[in-house]
Amino acid sequence: MRAARMHGYNQPLVIEDVPVPSIEPEEVLVRVQAAGMCRTDVQMVDGYFTGLKLPFPATPGHEIAGVVASLGSAVPASAGLAVDDQVVVVGGYGCGACPQCHVGNHQICANGRWPGFGLYGGYSEYVPVPYQWLIRLSKDDHLKPEELAPLTDAGLTPYRGLKKLQAAGVLRSNNVVAVIGVGGLGTYGVQYAKLLSGGATVVALARSDEKLKAAKELGADATINVRGKSSDEVRKELKRQTGHTEFNAVLDCSGAEEAIRLGFELLATSGAFASVGLIGTRAEIPLFPFVAREYSYYGSFWGNYVDLSEVIELARKRLIRHEINLVKFEDVNENLNKLRDGDFVGRAVMTFP
Image 1 (cartoon, rainbow, N blue to C red):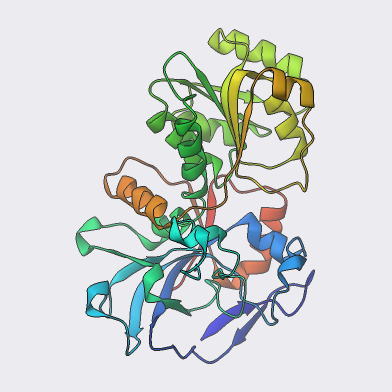
Image 2: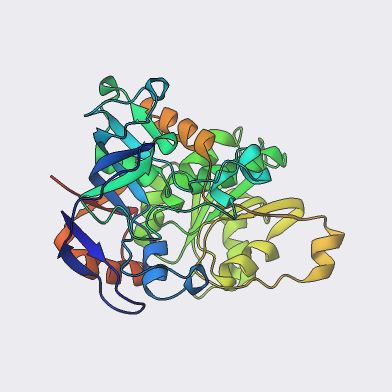
């Protein structure tokens, strides 16, 4: 099979012919049909995750959709899987025994592993997956692999973040919800904000008019280009477009330090902020307003099996739209560079015939 593999940090991926993986008794061999390209893949290549101590050669790609090619001998019939079934891969294979796994948070299991952060990932034609971490789709769903693959992260991560804001009680009518960053995650984040916020005003913030146009088409009530603007200027523009001067809820899909700072400078008393993006490395928040105005700050990482099942159901019911850029496997390094530069509106997805 072909695989695009890392042989070290800060090096281009190498497209190689390698053996099709063998599978363990409880694993399923998935033939990859589509793999989403995430900024996390760029960060992995660039050494952002050096603490994970990747084994080389490593194969990136954690957004995976495909079909079952073969089943291990110990995959139970109760898994409901058969050869040629369409499946998506749930990221974050938990150990199943730790406190986080016991409450369903397998994606933050300290003893687990992630597809695309080791020998096997979606940037290859086949990947072995433990049967527990596959979601099967019906042939009647008529969902394309290139639509399904991004849902496993780009569509999943903002959904979990919005659920945390919903649980905080800040998504309701007459409130204002901001989505900062309209890339692969933000295009879904805008849609979830409309679906989950009970009629709140949804405002998209980004540094590109092209991305803001996409956000408007996906349901944003207002859009603000924040490039070169101070928080006071953004506040004035917010007032002009919506009549409000503050955000009750913020979903930050960028992770940039300036984006987090802006979100908190415009956050209303008792507001809530959820971070799902990881461009930067730290966040600095003034302590007194954080305490005195009773802000809530949520970290939200990826999503669990239940979260992804809900996202897939929304897709089945055609309640979410996809901003997909189909790219060629052979151009993987060129497209990683485009991701570095933030050139994609929506998600770049590689497809395999």
